[in-house]
Amino acid sequence: MTQAIVIVICSLLLLAYIFDLTSSFTKIPSVILLLLLGWLGRQIIDFLGFKMPDFSVLLPVIGTIGLILIVLEGAMELKINKSKVGLINKSLFPPLISMLALAFLIAVIFHYYGGFSFIHCLINAVPFCVISSAIAIPSVKSLAASDREFVVYESSLSDITGVLFFNFISLNETFDISSLGHSFLQLIIITLVSLISTVGLSFLLSKIEHHVKFIPIIVLVILIYAITKSFHLPSLIFILLFGIVLGNLEALKRFKWIEKFRPDILDKEVKRFKELTFEASFLIRAIFFLLFGYLIDTNEVLNTDTIIWAVGIVAVIYIFRYLQLKFSGLAIKPLIFAAPRGLITVLLFLSIEKTQSISLVNKSLVIQVVLLTAFIMMAGFITTRNAVKD
Image 1 (tube, rainbow, N blue to C red):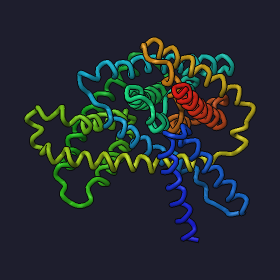
Image 2 (tube, one colour):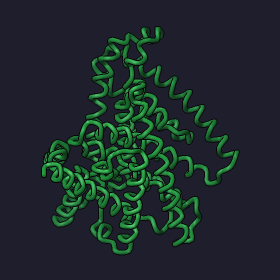
Image 3 (cartoon, rainbow, N blue to C red):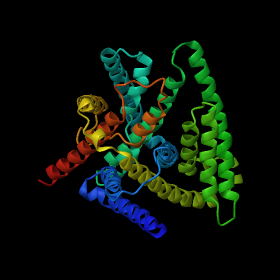
Image 4 (cartoon, rainbow, N blue to C red):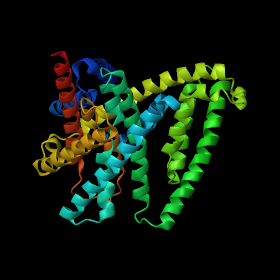
């Protein structure tokens, strides 16, 4: 039995790797294949009559680790220099305005039809407004370099700003001077913690000579995130700052104090750390979507009570997407299709407290929105590629 489990796990992860490799050619997002693979595994297990433990408790844990690694991966890809100012502005401010407007519109609709508290409607709306970098970035490998770079910046920043906004409204159900002051204080504290932690972790990265050094650093990153999160601090800011510092060491070399970190050695170690982070991110992401697919009930996907809501939400998502790209002066195609929902949407949905949840938003609706946006991205990229070939 042990050998069989090992064989199954290894086979699934190798298939996940193949899906990731071929997604740029087939235009099929790997998340669709991973979800399908996990779902098929569940059907086979149920058919054979095997009794399996409840894996649902693992999903938030794996998702949280995945979130940390994905944001860290995205932050290390962000190059902060004068030549990127225009790109950063286009990938931050218009998408942020679009996300906030979309969240408030969906919340208004939930409030109007369900009569729920508006703040609870807003909390439940935000997960649908965040672009998933875990799906978007691997899916745009075949696009033009400028489009691909925009998607990397936009989706990475969408993850970060979306989670920060969600945390703010879920922890502050009233908006007043007191809540804003409290949030500002939290921002100052997490910034100080981030700077101290970044300096300390960078120092360790340059000084540790033991053959095992990167896993302890990643564990420390996750630990710092978890500790600051337990104090209700915006922990993703730490991940963002740490990743940006590691990804922009060249810009820091002009400062004399950086010499204490042995920049030449640190630069080599950071490259190796990036590689490990990217691979760990792939592994956790694959496990998350396989597990999520395994936990999907067929009735949830085919739920007719939520499909109208799912189609409506997806339609509004792409209307706002079109307006955002038009306002930014960017090409509508193929970028309009690069707006999938995924890991962050699921994770934020699972993070909603029972006292803040509303009956209109359930697992069926989340699954349907994730699948619809993934299928639209797949179909859009395929038709765009065919149009270019023609």
